[in-house]
Every structure is written in C-alpha cells, then in structure tokens.
Length: 586
Ligand code: ADP
Image (spheres, rainbow, N blue to C red):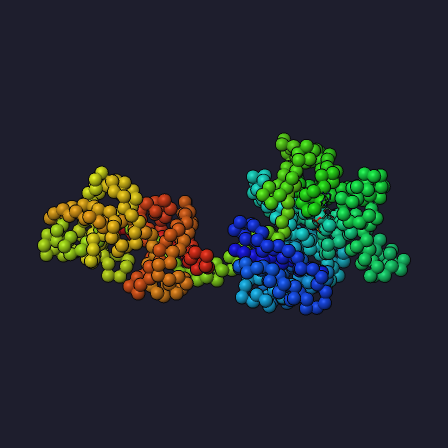
C-alpha cells in the first residue's frame, strides 16, 4: 500500500510517500513558509503536484495530541476531526496545525482513507500511579491535569526493533527507551506496555532538551512570576531559552556545544553534564519502577549520532548488569537497511542498543494496518465451504458403453454439492505406464467428453504427467487407459490435474466483488498448518452453489478438517470471506 505520511507544523508540511510492502520511501520533501490561514490547502496542492502521479492509497497524519480518547491510530471522520479540535488547548503549538493539514488533505483527497497517528497514544494506558500528579485531585481532574507523554510513535517503533534484535517478544522485556533529539523523552516499556514516560501534561517535563528545561521545581515558576516575569516571557523561557541552548548560551545543536566544550567552554561542558546526568537518572529510576531491566534503547538525533554523549550516559551501569562496550559504540553506523546496533558487551546481562528511529515509516505502517483492519471489518464474510475432491472420472456416452456395456445407465449413489450432479455406483480402474489405481468413482451425469481428474501424487503413481487444467479443458491433456467391467478404453487425452477453483452463483460473485475467471487467494487458518492458496480460479454460473474445490494433495498439505477457517482475498482488492472446510469424497 502506498501511504502518504504528513507532518503538518506551524511553518511547514513534511511529506513522505512510503510503499508499506517494502518500507521504501518513494518521494519525500517539505513545503515551507506556511503563514496565514488557508495556506495548508495551498501547500497540500503543491505536495500533490510533487507526487508526480504516483498512486496514493491512504494518508497517514501525525497528530501530536490524542488526549485520553485515542490509544491507537484512528480512521479520521468528522467526529474524529471534532475530537482533535477539542484537544487543541492541550497542544496549542501542534494540534491546530495538524488539524489544518488534515482538513486540507481530506478536502483534496476525499475518497482516500485518512488515518491519524497520535504521539500520545502509547501512553494513554499509563498506570494510574504513573500518570497522576500529586495535586489536589478534584482540581487536577477538573483541569484534565495528567501525564500524557509524547514521542510515543518513536518509542513504540524503536522498542519493536530492539525486541526483534534481541530475539525476544516485547511481552518478555523490560526496556528503557530514550528518544534524544531536539525534544527528548524517556519511556519505560514493560512487557509491551508503556508504564512510565518523562514528558508529562506537556512536552516540557522530563529530560533536558534542545531549548526546553525538562524537570523543574514548580516553585521556580512561582518565584519568576512574583518577580514580575510576564506569562509570555515565561513561556518563551520554557520553550526556547532553556535546555542545552539556555545552559550553553551557544544554541541547541549538541555538535556545536561539544566543539565548544572541547575548546574549554565551561557552560558548554555544564550543558553536556546536566543533559547526561538527567538521562542517567531516568534510566535508574525506570529500572527501579519496573523492578529490573533487559535493555536500554537510544534513538533520535543525539541518541543515534552522539557517541560521546552515549558514553557518558551508559558508563558505570555495571551495577544494573549493563556493561557498555566503547569499541562497539565507536563502530556504530546506522542506516535504513541496518537500523539497530548493540553497544553493550556480548556478555552484558542488560543490553544497550542504538536504533535509528523512523516515525514516518511507523506512521505509514500504522496507517496501512488501520486501513486493512477497517476493510476486513467492513467486508461481508459469507462462508465458503471447501470441498476436497478425490480422484474421479467423467464419462461420455460412448465411453460408458465401452466400459460398462451397451445400454448401461449410470446408477446414482449419492448427490454431490453442485446441483444435479451425483457420485455413481460405477467405478473404473485407471491404468498408466507405471502403475494403476483401481475403483475410481464415476460422477454423473454423462458429459460431452471424458475427463479424468487426479492429484499430483496419483500422476506419479500412474507414471503420467497431466497438465493443470480448468474442468472441461481437456484438449491436449494427458492420455490414460480406463478399465471397466465390460471393456477397456484408451483415451488419447482427458487426464488432468484440476486447477483449484471456487464455484459461485452470480449472487456470490456480486457479494465478493469478483467475476468469472478472476483468480483469487484463499488463506486457510485455524488448522495445524495454515496455508494460503494462490491461483484459485473463480467460476461463476447460476447453476453453481458456493464451494471451493481442492484436491487431496492440497487438502493434505493444509491439513484441513471440519471447521477450518480462512480468508478469501481477491488480488489487491478487499474482497475477503471466511472459508470453512469440510471433507467430501466422490
Ligand atoms: P528533532 O527532535 O527536532 O527531530 P533530531 O532527532 O533530528 O531532532 O535531533 C537533532 C539533534 O541531534 C541536533 O540538535 C543535534 O544536537 C543532534 N545531533 C545530530 N547529529 C549529531 C552528532 N553527530 N553529534 C552530536 N549531536 C548530534
């Protein structure tokens, strides 16, 4: 699926078109200099022009604040837009712009699904003890004062990659994830759930950031207000004049600060020390709240690139069981193909990993997941029984006479599923150059041409190579000899290995959105050996009832039995159906 990921901010919209099947970025870029109202729409039409005609299947939107309502990505409808708007007071610097981007994209591409992926979603389920501020409780509830957390998309993404690199399920792991960029946050990911995070009600709390202070004694704010600092000046101080920039006096870029520190600048050194100290404090705190630790995961511009800062953060954690390996760290070079590197010693009980985050890809994958789930949920699930066809024979009138004697009529034994057809009492023997198979059931009524359907295993036994054919297409098929009680018949052609197929009535075809001779995939699941069959031919006729036919080899490979279920998938389009299996033999 091609997902267009949008990150709409106050001054720019970043976009990236991602093929979620390969995770490849097809196009990416940024439209800058947004200003006045309404320019998101203009910026979005510029993005569409830059997509150069590439197909877009869905749009994934980064939305910073999902409040308590959104614990997962969500398909955007009018109701969701209202909800995101109502959350603007909680994220005044972000949600209004995210919303403007969403509205512009929806207006331009109304037929596509739009999915909002929230930075806060990972933390909606924070335990009460972790999300609650120790304030007057009714007052806190009245104002919605709680820890929301941010950067959730990145924390979840790198936790997933770390678990894969560790070869263990997330559900088994206690991780501290550190997203260290211009914004910085730490999270405790305990058995697959976030149980702590350092950003709080707003993205100001926690770690030292590029221009934000992180944790502060709230008494400082009172003191500054009493000293006459205006609210706006306080806002400016907390958002833009603090953190690495405020400490160093140099700016928020750690590379510049490191260069100054090396040259002896004491404020630059202090900035680095305070930053690393705060991160170490959180790692220890989260190991304590989780009651142990399996890995520390670093990401973000600083986490991924700043080797010296990683060393400061990760040294002397041996008491926790984490042995940092400076040589490994020195060799870290991440890229999209190799986004994970270990920086802990091989024998270290607690691992340390550096992971390249990719929030756009995470948003694209989340978006594809929501769209797929939505399609599956809204696609009707008419059950398709699976019939297992054992080897069988269709005869024409001359063949019946040759094998069973003149004037012989087939005697129905029992009806089979397709209307008017039956298994007959009569059987014949198949004789091939290598071997024979006796007592093969004849199906009635008589047909215009003889046709013998066997499995690949049967062919091997007989010593014949039969082509895979749709029923009725016997021209040029394999020869076979039939023995009956009244004589032997050599067919120069007529032996086929039946192409797996689904019989359906035109009503069923309309239901599934498929047409005669379409090829579909059928996924069987619920049995001991789940299997997806490709190249399944759809046959539509008003004489058919809904049923999929596979041969015994195919049934054995899937070990299907009564009650097995699966999905029918029509190429790339969303027709899906539950498939039930039952075993019949002709
Ligand atoms: P944002 O939170 O804005 O997405 P990033 O995750 O891109 O920010 O992180 C940006 C920060 O990463 C820069 O401010 C810079 O300090 C830091 N950084 C990037 N590369 C290096 C490096 N090689 N050494 C030290 N710091 C680096």
